[in-house]
Length: 299
Image 1 (cartoon, rainbow, N blue to C red):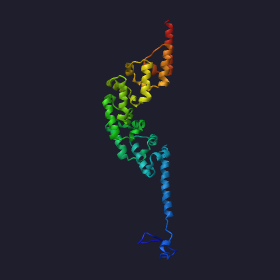
Image 2: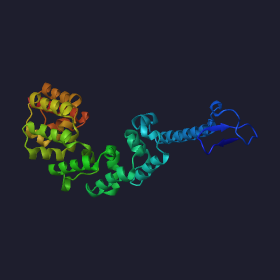
Image 3: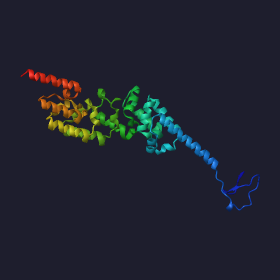
């Protein structure tokens, strides 16, 4: 039996069936340790923690990665994850896609749907004007949208892109919402400036980007610079051809551009960029055979 003094926080042990404190001086008494309560509490905490791990595993989310990148999830209730799932599913995100999204961005596990997630969907619906049925496509293609600030990131990017010409029939769609997660100063503007440095006008660059929005996702160092150099120096290309076929930058330099160009040079032939790159290997080889046959027949 345990009695707690009303006058002191000191806890005393009583002998069995005794209604009075032991005569042993308080200083020599063994403090009471609620081992049973602690054990029960620890057991409950462990069970709840295990439930979260099982839940993540069912979603195919790497639990080790999730806890490492979002330590706050350790102490968060399972209900926080359930509220995130309910929020995303209400916008058409299927459970398999949800798992991939949470695995990529574990910070969403402890996000507040009302202050963190709903504002993003509201922005996509009412400012970007993405149709509701297309919202899942936007998010699945670019889950990073869900962890971007509308005020600091998404809205400034949308303004820049619209100034560039992404309006009307060229408006941002579920296929190009990924451009919204790019920093204006750090990513979008430098790429425009690089293309301008090649000798293209702003209007020409704008038209190129509108025709091939992927240009704004390419690296200046790893894509634009080596490919532009090869086109201008080795292929002796004309900027007018780049304007007509900006998709040139989307093809592999080592895997397609160089091999096909060098083969054409070796055989003494030339082709416009479009015909050289956009066809399959089989079609390209068939075209070479046809050109060689014509060359022989014309001798």
